[in-house]
Image (cartoon, rainbow, N blue to C red; front, side):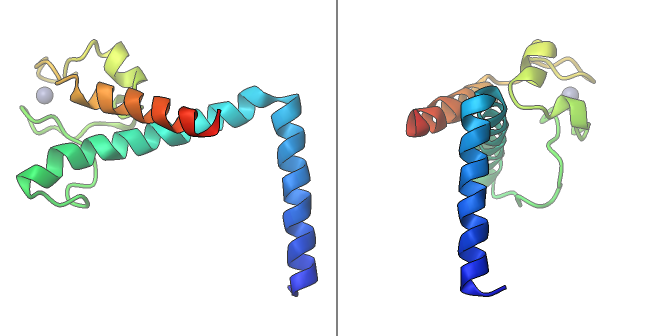
Length: 116
Ligand SMILES: [Zn+2]
């Protein structure tokens, strides 16, 4: 791919992006919301693990700090899992600190403030 083709592709991507943004803004904002929530979830993970000198890669999945059970996919959806599980671990029932929820919401709010 030469430079002209690259510029043409980028120009068309920009046109397509703007078309979707103007026609179906909920799609773009929904994807951005999911992206922001994922960043917030990762920051929550860092907030828990780094002060405890734990690796960010091992264990790969988040776990309950009480029963050490690794969380399954539907327990890891940012914001929604916290609400649906009513801030409790599915396995042992211990209350989950609101820190994760607050970090995720704040990240989403800050990231939307950056684009709106
Ligand atoms: Zn637990």
